[in-house]
Length: 299
Image (cartoon, rainbow, N blue to C red; front, top):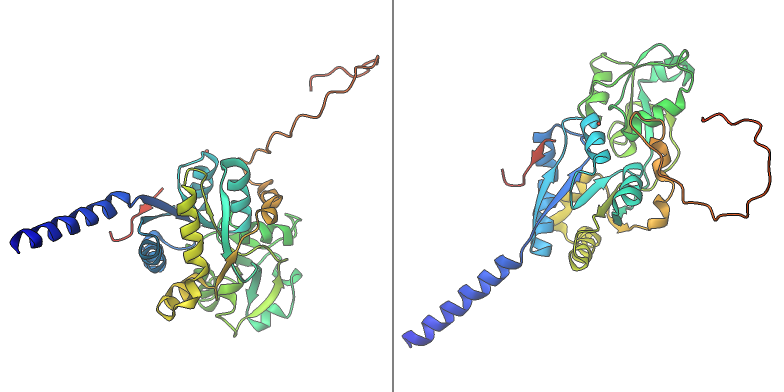
């Protein structure tokens, strides 16, 4: 009897050891929409859910601000998964070999918010006035630049917010006259008026690096698609500002990095070499030669 009990205990220990050995560590990077400590609180339910659903360990990585985030992205900093807006997803897909897995069911739009009195004057009424946005190359900042293309006739854009909600709160404290925020934040403030709303983009997307094994990518995608089915995971969706996730289509991101083309440090991808044509005799009349903070789940 003792021998049988001992063998069962050994078998259980070996099984647990095998499970632990098969578990791998993966890093999820997110945009710096929150202070690092706040980001850990917001994304912790997601990390816990993915760990439980896949049997792997997930760490959260974010940056102090968008300038650092953009520098790390251009440098190809190694991460396994990324949850970002469309323009960053397209950049990772085209430059770093990432594959879009799932996206929020809701498309992305950005709204320029103000109180009713200021909103009455419309978009021109904010010229010269303080408007808060997250720094470039956040999507909100880039779209605000599209709205006011003339630098002489534009608002006094202040990139002082450390989160999208900070900009809205600065309206209430009269530190700014308007704020550019994503729609999942704008809908939380029905007492403010939308001065202008951007065009529609593919919803925030979870993508995976090419170094992530295919079975892990599939497990993560499957877990995200089922996220809305369990009432116990409702908190995760609330924190992420979405009703559910749906499959992502890689074709939707093919041209999306163009939004980054005017950002400092952006370099266009080398175009594919055109097929050579037979040389023709010609006369050349013009021969001139023509730059993070890491938050770990559970810390």
